[in-house]
Amino acid sequence: MGKNEHRPIDCELVRTLFNYQNGSLVWKVNKGTAFEGDKAHSNGNGYLAIKLFGKPYLEHRLVWLWHGNELNGDIDHIDGNPLNNKIENLRMASHSENMRNAKMRSDNKSGVKGVSWCKTKCKWKVQLWFDNRQQYLGRYDSLDMARQIVESARLKYHLTFANHGI
Image 1 (cartoon, rainbow, N blue to C red):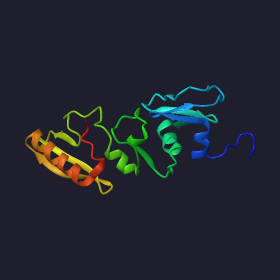
Image 2 (cartoon, rainbow, N blue to C red):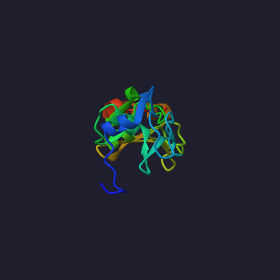
Image 3 (cartoon, rainbow, N blue to C red):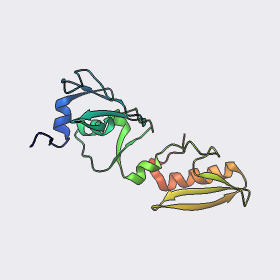
Image 4 (cartoon, helix red, strand yellow):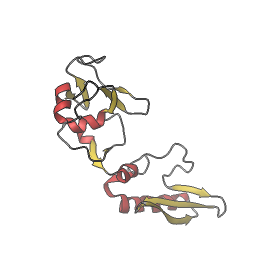
């Protein structure tokens, strides 16, 4: 390998560089600007990251590798907390599954994930992503009924990745 080429990041390399302690990777060697005992730092997007060979890696992906797992998709935080990188809180997911487990968007005005107000009909409109597209589930007079419909559909179609936005 040339000077600027590096071997792929794999379980062996991650275990050589880090110890796993209670959901965190801790450097066990001095490397570049990282020193033995250092931990990951916030990347500004709500995740913890570690720089290896000049490139940032999300800590939860390295934790996944450290435990001998393959990286062949997204890694989902089961509890929705991107800072909780304990192995029991991580699972392999397709991109669609990972999006199903997303929290409610900050611009949501109804307070219910998948429910919005339809001005023209003066009703609550319910929509949910499944089968790779947004599905329309109807309009309802009450927010409570809209909530029941979307949460029921989410449990049916999103299964273990169902997240009601809490």
